[in-house]
Length: 254
Ligand code: BTN
Image 1 (cartoon, rainbow, N blue to C red):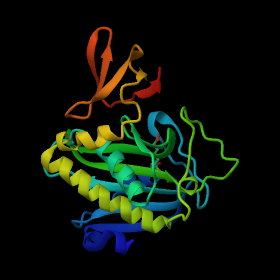
Image 2 (cartoon, protein in one colour):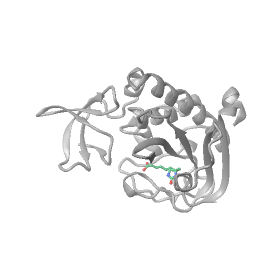
Image 3 (cartoon, rainbow, N blue to C red):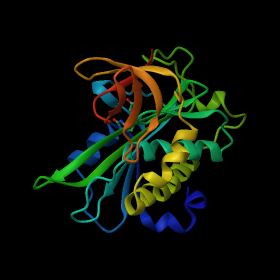
């Protein structure tokens, strides 16, 4: 991991556990004392991994990389707009650096390869006195899923073993993702999401396709025309252009 992080290694404190319930839950319940470094907790296996929308994130020994990053915001700063999309972009770039082809992003932050999900992201905010203080950024990447794994997913799943001839170590992959996270979340905090919008849209799995958004009061159907400067999904609907904010919603092919 040190080789991938280079000079950034000192910016992170990384703890790797053989097993825990959920790296997100652990960092939320028991954050390490602040020492100026970005705390990272990885686990070889999670017994109660969590996904978006109340779903479980299953794990098997050696089958995936599962980790969470505690990202503190500057005092008084808001949650950076587009954070959730930028984390997906960072994971996508790390996979591309390894030589994976066909990496796509599904709004707000799933990472797909040729239409199948390879990584999921769960971001949970930590607040104090009504203000956002930090985000726990949880990432799960499929390395080599068991052949009989049953995973509920609207798009089907894939893993790195199916994309690459030689599987990288979990530690190398962690280093690559952390380096990209540092780069992209840093830009997003300093300059906003707008400058990263093109990079996100280049990888948009549903560009110009008809989609449905589930989870709002009424399902919303339209054509996915991209994302806005703050990361909101832009849908062309019969009633005009609609913005969908990243909340507890899910995107499906219409
Ligand atoms: C999703 O696609 O629904 C999001 C999945 C997020 C899974 C990761 S694994 C590490 C971290 N700990 C958790 O319990 N969840 C996230």
